[in-house]
Length: 226
Image (cartoon, rainbow, N blue to C red; front, side, top):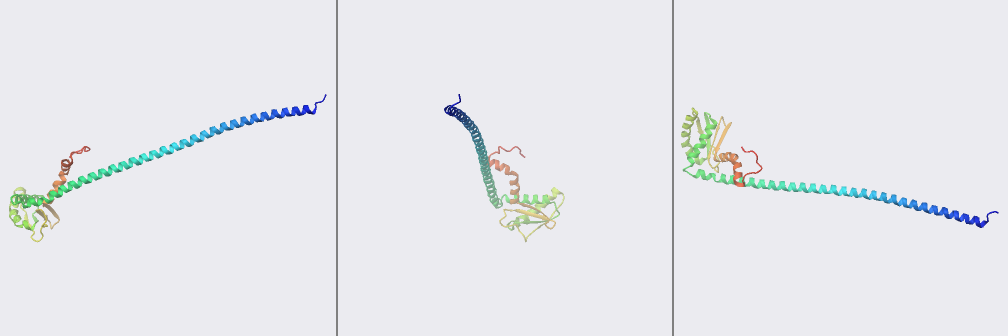
């Protein structure tokens, strides 16, 4: 007997249902796999971007920390420079005060003649020249004229020879000078300043480290001493 149309239709519907079910299952399988791959890729991209963000902020944090250290170092150095400048200004003020007080030395008539004689002798002994020209303050002219012969006698005893000293009566040391003399030789080619100011500068350059220690205490960072 042949298959009826109903049987054919029934088998076709059964086959179509089976095919549709397999298609649905396959589609669900594809969707599930696609979603899994999507989630994996999304996770990878999120992690990648998170790592980039972390690296960016870590780099930024290091830059900020470096900038902070630079600013801190600059501020510290500026503070140190200000402190050093204040110290040097204070030392300069001390020396200026000492320089101002030099006039008191030449005003002391009991001490100044011996001091002036010593300054003349030091200058003569530095030059040791036969012919010299001596300059002094105008107010010291009479005293210098009295002291020069004594100095030449002492020089001859020490040197074994005698200098000829010409006192310059035209060009005097500045009136504001604290005192002392200036001696030159060989037409002014060599010159020795033996004034109270020059002696103070010479002494100050030698004792400034001691002045710093006296004013500010010892430097803990100093390793070497003269």
